[in-house]
Length: 425
Image 1 (tube, rainbow, N blue to C red):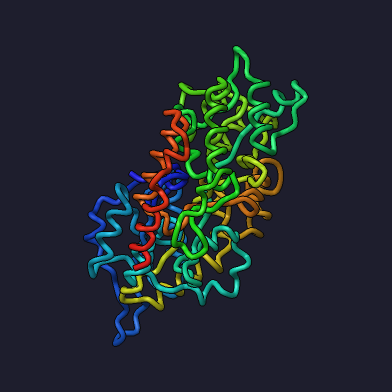
Image 2: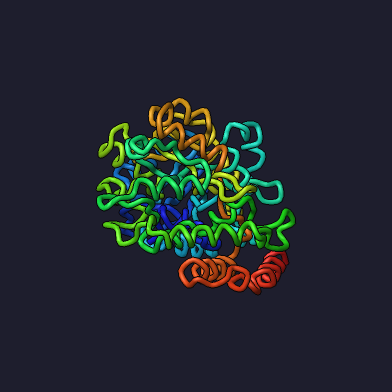
């Protein structure tokens, strides 16, 4: 089962997705893709796939959207289980869906394999309306192969009253975060929580971005972060863990709100999806932040994940499918707001819609939406699985194992060059 938190894991490679839930008694591969009969003039028959969303009501909502489209008959396929694997297999057959959602707007393999229709033309007139970091992530070689549906993100929660009691302002740098976490921790509450592995797993490539770097250079030919600033960022986080201000062994992992709700930590790194539970528990006594900049060249960071609606370039109804995707994810703004906010807390992909939505007009929700627009980062489309695995291992060796970061990342530059050369070929 794929889930939202796996889509947002910072250190991984070209895989993962978002949390979702149920149904589909039939094998998805048994669902035929319909086509219009040119002799009868019947409306095109399209199939549209979603992965299984965990929030109640999503399945019924997307079925309702499809039923309201007048220019084609659209059958929604809800796909439980290993969605990416099931979809990948289906796309190699003549029974593939006409329209389907995919993490971060499609993979490099899908683009190179000619599986995704180029949707640049339909989004071009409204491109500036969409969240720009998301659009940049969806763009490869000046083409866009998916229309963003909604945005999920990670962010830092903090208890206002605990900081105010110590006369501390919300931290804007990593050094300030360390000092604040150490100041507010006590026998009753811990300082900072980002998972029971002390945050090593989820924070992942945040250390790259927060130290002021990108994963890859502009040409995508080599790693761009193997610098003293990055190495110093890893050591700084290791020292933070050793200080005792970082919580491990909490009642749940970073992706659940429990540690923050239960008062186990004054700061928690978590997901936007936890916002309703945290509001219910603490009312106005909390705020949200981006992960703060590390070092003189650093910058604040929030990782984001977004599913995109793709059109099967090898399907029988490419034009009709493209028209449907434009109708649903570009034109139907009421449905876009409904999809993002009526079944959990997610940010509409268009900035103006976020500003119109109650959850994002003010307070922590408005801050979260602004952070994605100003500080949003996501894995590069060419950050491959082998690179992600090697990176994660090296980070763990530094923070948990105490290894010198230069030694831990010895060989990574060569691995990255080799991987990128293979992907470019």
